[in-house]
Amino acid sequence: MPTPARTDRGAIVDAASGLLEEGGADAVTMQAVAERVGVRSPSLYKHVENRRALLEAVMTAAVAELDALSATVRDRDDARRSIAAQLDGLRRFARARPQAWALVMGIAPGAPLPSVASTEGSVRSLLEDVTELTGPDRALDGARLVVAWANGFIAMELAGAHRLGGDLDGAWRWGLARIVAALEPDRPAA
Amino acid sequence: MPTPARTDRGAIVDAASGLLEEGGADAVTMQAVAERVGVRSPSLYKHVENRRALLEAVMTAAVAELDALSATVRDRDDARRSIAAQLDGLRRFARARPQAWALVMGIAPGAPLPSVASTEGSVRSLLEDVTELTGPDRALDGARLVVAWANGFIAMELAGAHRLGGDLDGAWRWGLARIVAALEPDRPAA
DNA sequence: ACCTGAACACCGTTCAAGT
DNA sequence: ACCTGAACACCGTTCAAGT
Image 1 (cartoon, rainbow over the protein chains, first blue to last red):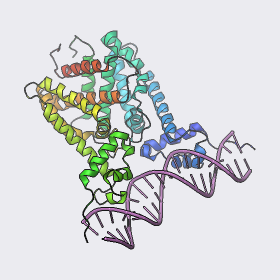
Image 2: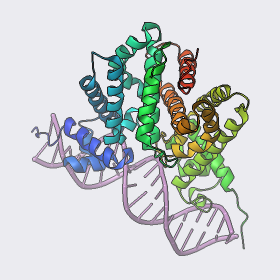
Image 3: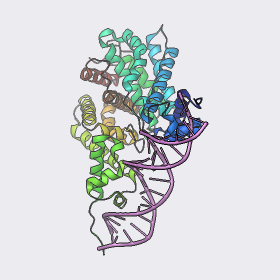
Image 4: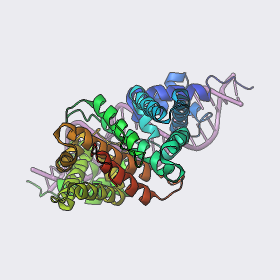
């Protein structure tokens, strides 16, 4: 006789996301996830292939959130403003969900896969904004410049680069202005 | 009767470094390390406090290598050239020892601690070079700009951001030129 | 003073047995 | 069709016993 499912994939991924943010990827054990959704750990294997696949699902969900956020903050009327808004959004997401961000960046302790590449899906709208400033020939290089800086800055910030002192928010804004200006070859922006 | 030591901390850290590069931090198990140095895993605890401390020692060794490399490639006569040389050196190191770089970046699977901050020790000489271009007021912001971009780019590269295509070496050189130019407020560099 | 086997608590994963 | 307990191979770590 068929037994009705006592949990499902969505609940499992949610539980894993919660555990990830609370204790890092190491805290996402099959037993902890199982306990949170109310089953025993072997039952999870009816819904996810294994722990690695579960973490990939968590990652995919985070990428989707980032894509949605990117679409929300985008400003189609002003490329410069749009780039700034999207990078600010990325930083906000990273501060709110550092472990998910680290997972997406391929930076997480216990991460399943390198995956910055998948983030580049959410770079698509950024790419269009950047193209407006660089022209099509340097659009890809420009997008890489911008994304590399932002993620590198965030990595430093989350890793606690406070010890050098200084105003981190100020450093972000100054860097952001410089980076955007650097996309425009000839005009020496303010 | 005292028994002569059959291994020592240096050999243990070396073995751990090798395992790290071969299979990532997950491969640095106490048993694998023990086997490589020719003892049983419990004996390791006579020389290192625990696995976490061992990984920290590996990280410290990598930071020391980076510092040495940085000192080697530095060019005291030309700040711009010196910055480029140091970032190129960082990229070379990251490509040769991706796992060690990831560990230092706080990016490794199973990393013990966020530690980009400690990298900033090796940023000291970079900081001096940057100061020549930005002046003292923006030196810290400028160093953060440069280091963030370089590490972000390397993270993308190591994570396999090839899928978007394009010339990655070209993107690095172009970005590097732009970043260095961005340090000089007014002059619109070539 | 260092090394070892045995032991403990924990992992992920498989599988036969239940409903 | 899903859930479970038992089991397996593996972790990190402790500790009494060896030399």
